[in-house]
Length: 286
Image 1 (tube, rainbow, N blue to C red):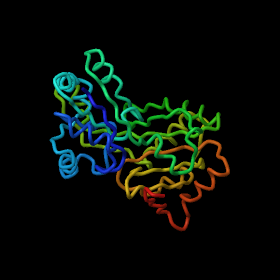
Image 2: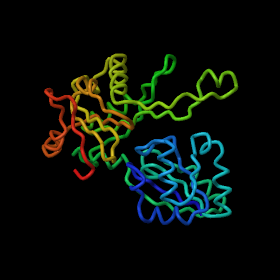
Image 3: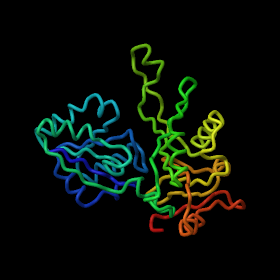
Image 4: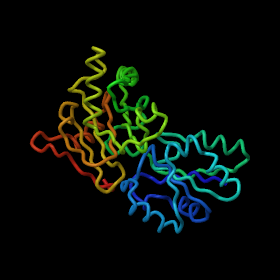
């Protein structure tokens, strides 16, 4: 049996009881570590905390393992119960459908244990979840690669009065272009896009497109470490959010569409005060 288990967004305490019961009875435990991370990242202490809670070792499954060596996971699941842990919800921001499909094709049973995802946790800012349009991903720009296909999606959402969730790039154990061209993989240091970088890129694309999907005065919501005890939420125009220090990763950004008066009341709780640019740190209980 293959158990695909969501871990939630904060730390080791966010796994559900159903998920914890499943992990404890599995022979092997793999943890996906390239689409999102818990608050402690991939630190040895953080992983050790999980291993102590689960009572068994964890194998970190990076992009290379999941996309190129999934047979190792599936082979283990044919012989015994295997847990595949995913930060957030298994089918939230990034799905793992390919692994599930391949398991089914091999006659391996699959059970999914859901959990909180960034896709619903952003509701804390007060923007109603059913008023969101298509979610977009914003990748790191390079000297030779500056994709901007997300612009049309944001534009369409805004034309419909809908909000847009922007998921920001995470690069963990990514081979450098130079090493790939030489035929020998050399991995770059981990990088996590900040809200500040995302806005800089959004404004660069706006200037190139000479469009009007948004501008530096468009209200946005910046989220840092959503679901953690020290999560930070700040509302303000792009030009003001550019100067806010959101702290450590992970970050995401929402570009607002048309807002309802009740949404505005909630947004004002987190709105950037020009006399205090630090924004608000918000406990999960809020």
